[in-house]
Image (cartoon, rainbow, N blue to C red; front, side, top):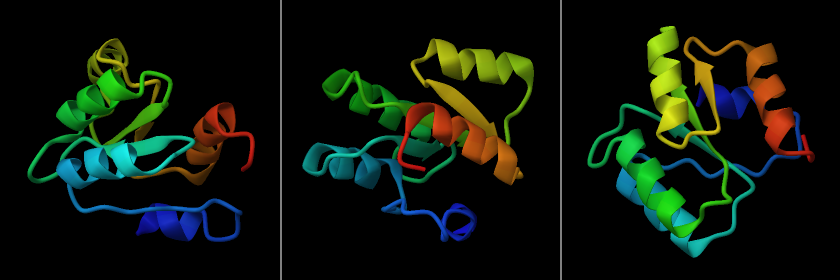
Length: 106
């Protein structure tokens, strides 16, 4: 919900899902410019969901969204196929910086 509030004044169209399985299903049924993927989700965690999405849509940027901000964690996420990382608590400037890098419509 916090990301939704931060992006409220942009023209971004958002879809929020409750777990990794729904994220994978959404990516299979709709076209997205990018995915903000929470790492810790029920049913299927963000790492597994990103791997499934990447296998079917390798050009879809998936950004890790997590409180795990140690440099070793960030390196691990990037090596697993995430294109970037946004740490929690979310800094609005960091969020917009990463989103602007991957989505020109913001």
